[in-house]
Amino acid sequence: MKNKVKTLALIAHDNKKHDLVNWAIAHKEQLQKYKLCGTGTTARLVSEATGLEVKGYFSGPLGGDLQIGAKMSEKAIDKVIFFWDPLAAQPHDPDVKALLRIAVVYDIPIATNRSTANYILAD
Image (tube, rainbow, N blue to C red; front, side, top):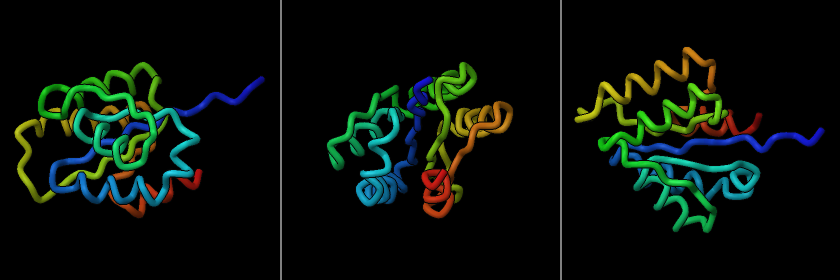
């Protein structure tokens, strides 16, 4: 039986998008092994910077976090890289908390910084 290609979601708050894009560029070879998706602007920026195909959902404040959370509950997403900014107020904070809660409920690995993102890719 052929191994399933895992799906990895990429999300970043505005103040962290640059960091996630740079991380993705540095890990492009490893990211090629995944089916990638992400919230709107993050997906577009990573795709443009790396040339990788990244399925884009809505932007986070417009429901993208909830879309990704729904996919996680359907077991359609295997891992999440979410460079979030815990020090900045987010207008969609309830959605962010829901996304984090869904990851815990469905036991989906979620990286919230560069160190944990590196660890998740090592798996």
